[in-house]
Length: 132
Image (cartoon, helix red, strand yellow):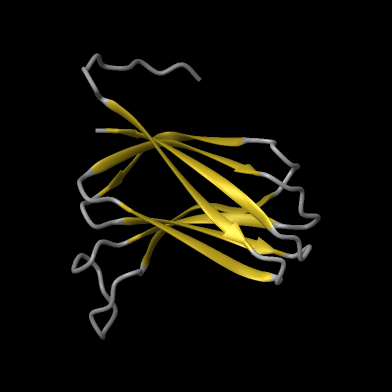
């Protein structure tokens, strides 16, 4: 879907991260924190190995002090951005182009949870497309 974009010098920023998955089955978590207000336009996920049955999901977490449980703790889920997205192959990038910009406050987090079902060691590369 084509969307109109505004012109701004240095308005886009691509940020890379990776999560190293060991051969032990189970969930692996990568939290990406934002130090300033950010609008997330899309996310690319690229696993370097195929893991049969492996899948991942993404959640938007609160900023510290914004929403908290009764004990005042952060990392409360504000929204689910992706769930049960399967690893489709080594080097096969999966790009999620959000229908609208996902706004993150300063201190907010994007959490990627990779569920290792196959028991294979791999690295999952994550590229965020943000607008400042």
